[in-house]
Image (cartoon, rainbow, N blue to C red; front, side, top):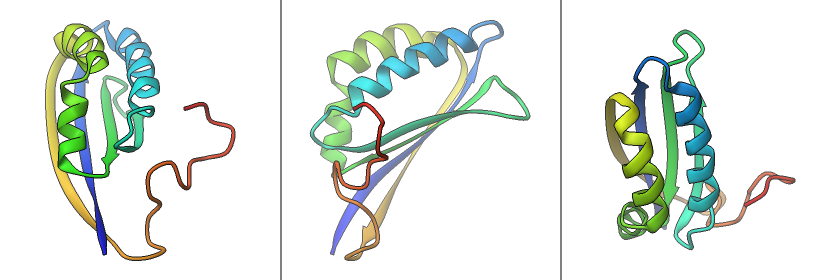
Length: 116
């Protein structure tokens, strides 16, 4: 049995910054999806309150997430431009025990037609 390291980040943007944060998250997602240890990276804008953003990330190991947090794109996009535009930010981590056939491994099960 293997496991997946999952991250749930909840952002609340400062007034007037949501569109720019979402644009930069798109850039961050594209870069992160190319990391060898990344399984998935998705983000969602709140329906009831569009200043709320949820990011769902999965990595093969906790070490892969740590490498992500020290990557050039995280430092240049996330730390330098996204985080300063947030009113609040929480990050929680979870581990999923994967049994055969339960969850895709890295690069498996990606949606067809989506650019990496």
